[in-house]
Amino acid sequence: ASASVCKHLDLQPRHLKMAAPSAPPPMFYLADIGGNQALDAFYLLIMGVFVFFMQCGFALLEAGTVRSKNTKNILLKNLLDACLGAIIWWAWGMGVAYGDSASEDGNVFIGTAVGGPGAFLAAGWGTPKGGFDGSDGYTISLWFFQYVFAAAAATIVSGAVAERAQLVAYLIYTSVITGFIYPVVVHWVWCNNGFLSGAFTQDKDKTVLGGCLDFAGSGVVHLTGGVAALCGAIFIGPRIGRFDDAGQPVPMPGQSTPFQVLGTFILWMGWYGFNPGSTLGITPAGYGPIMARAAMCTTLSAAVGGITVVFFDRIFSKTYDVGMVCNGILAG
Image (cartoon, rainbow, N blue to C red):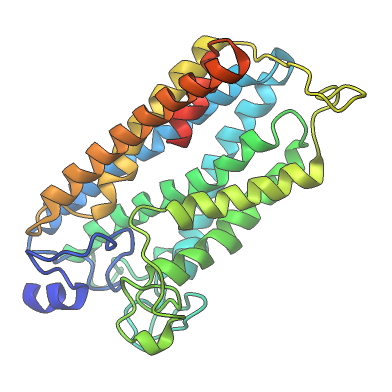
């Protein structure tokens, strides 16, 4: 059984494709990855906890960046991002992303419940009649891991519209991106039926130009959240008083530099769940080196980003700005 699953997942020991993971195998064949489903489920759960802790990093970073009068507003948005995201991802988000991944004839655009309940309302994971089987533990760990990815994608926007978006409007946005935009993009790229899934769609005739490869969400998570953030910033516009009559920016310092730095370090730590954890397992042959390489690249990217900003900020502004270094690390 494990051999057939590994064949289906294309998990060759020596030639693992660096583009793989972050897409689950077919919904009801999730557990038996190398016959060590319990260990892989535990690994995925721990990596998910790291990613979930990034919500704390977002909260501290944004609270430290805004003015004190807007602290409660930005923190409430971060809290409700996580709450709404969990309910939506359980109810239909996971189903839209992966609901028909067990079917070879699944929809190339959006996940459905072909041949059963799929992942909607977690209805296919353990039944009153049959109870939970060995696959359900890994499947539910995968649900959690994918949920924290969705929450991260939604939270990216909160900083872009900080101090100028009403709470109700922001919650509507969160519901739309978590329930109707992000999971559809996930299905395109990370489901084995997606028309952009170069790593997982076996029938390349279903894909556009062979699809694309996205290991840990540079496109699925950050591009989706970044485009939403850009659109929100354009439509809402700058904060009142951000620019003078000549169009020059007016400094609007945040209330707490320690919050900004602490938030940045927490986000940096969270990336060690986000990127190495995107192997979606640790027991298959060759996954250890992929995980370690992802951790090393994550470390160097953040470090080089911070040093680069220090260098150029000193040249152009003649100062050393802690906030700019934080931005450099996050960009890296």
